[in-house]
Image (cartoon, rainbow, N blue to C red; front, top):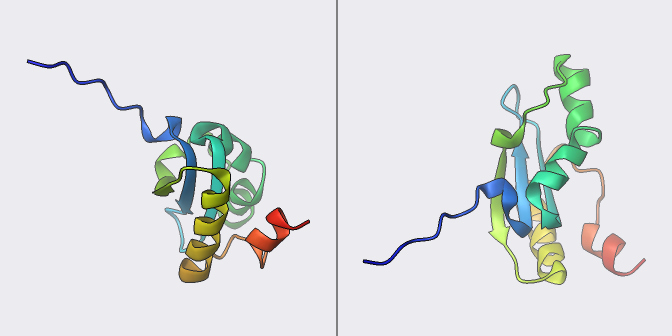
Length: 108
């Protein structure tokens, strides 16, 4: 009998493209991180997602981990950038503000 290793919670994964879906409205956000997802989620509380929750819903929740979903596990930062761009094009998230994310991040 072999022992299986426990899989880390989704927030401990690295190098992923992620989706935030507000549970109070249809607002959403697509992004990527090469770091642990939980680090990026904590930063989002002070950026577009946190501002959305506060201005639109009068709510600044500290726990929003459950509103994030991993769309793609990537092998490199470049893969993340490409997949982020493709998901943004496909999903058209309302909380994303950059129009051309891969060009803005790779070529500037």
